[in-house]
Image 1 (cartoon, helix red, strand yellow):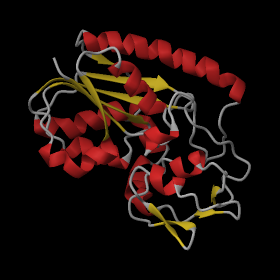
Image 2 (image 1 turned 180 degrees about the horizontal axis):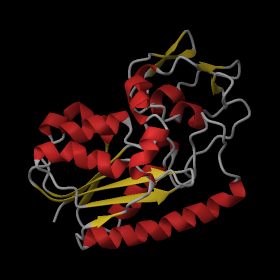
Image 3 (image 1 turned 30 degrees about the horizontal axis):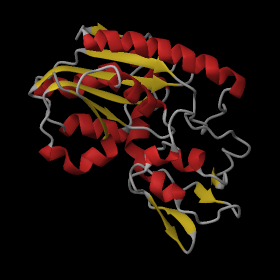
Length: 261
């Protein structure tokens, strides 16, 4: 049976999960949500379909939310989501939100999983976990993904429920985040360390920034707060106001820069 996995990623964690699962499934394609969005009306899906993405403010990233709302899953046999989260207790929101999106279309969400990954959202008070902790986090994620793969292969119903599933989005203001995220990039800027290499423009999954006069310019149209521009800049020249000053950059070690383009 055919397998298709759609992913959205800023620093590679979700893509790594998708690739690992795909390597252990038959006839499996791994497709970018941001790129597939352009041809979503022509997608013809059957078999098993999964979606892998990060948890944002205890919920679905805006681009994922729209993709799940618009994609045709009427001919699929088994549907699942996998949400990568960083902060301890940060798993929640995505299961119930996806079910609400699918219900009006008569689509059943067969399984939902949360995978703890290296936290990369540094626009709050915390920073990336200490580097010496990364190996343990990756190892635990790998073990969890192995379990998830077995469940998917056997097409089992499974729901990774969390006590934060419903209260998390309220506590962290998910609705406010969704309403403002695409235009909430005005605090991004490039420092004098920028060499106009253009990598930030290439790795932005929504093409929300371009180089103008040899400096990146954010368009305030499609930003997802994925922080790919911040984390992947080779000169560490992208900042977000004063919030990111001296904060650590991160990229999943198993994902190459080319895979973000």
